[in-house]
Image 1 (cartoon, one colour):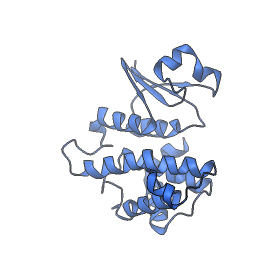
Image 2 (cartoon, rainbow, N blue to C red):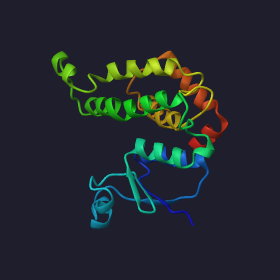
Image 3 (cartoon, one colour):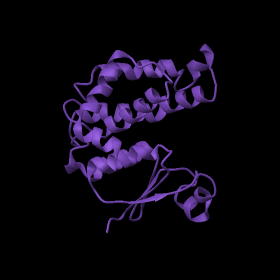
Image 4 (tube, helix red, strand yellow):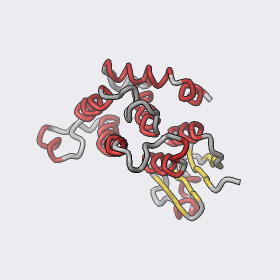
Length: 199
């Protein structure tokens, strides 16, 4: 029996972790928690004091935050090929876009969705500036994809960034650049990725 347990909700960022698990093809226990009371029990708060999902439990290890969970799983099962080798130069770009997306882009997206608009001076002080600024930056990374962010190999960063871009596209939150459209077309043409998205 798998020691991996994912606490999540089908309307959360945990869907990205579900997709990664399917691509990794490893067993795990999935625990669906409702928003509200189930995420604020004493037992769950002992795992994740934020009272949010997803949370991954692997034996005595507890990992929260979608990006951290994705990096952890891709490295734990590195033989599956969804992470660059530990000594690979591709680790630099892999880490860069994982944490840029988890940090500045997430912050900018939240500010945008809550109607928070920073003036120029406030943008200088913030870690993200504006949604347009961070998405323009991400576009430079996507433009260099050949065809994936780390080159010829589909990795967990494509699952993470790809899931985020697909959400933005579905919600019509931003207008995707040509390079982003091309990148998503590449992901959708990846048979295994596309199949897992629809399961």
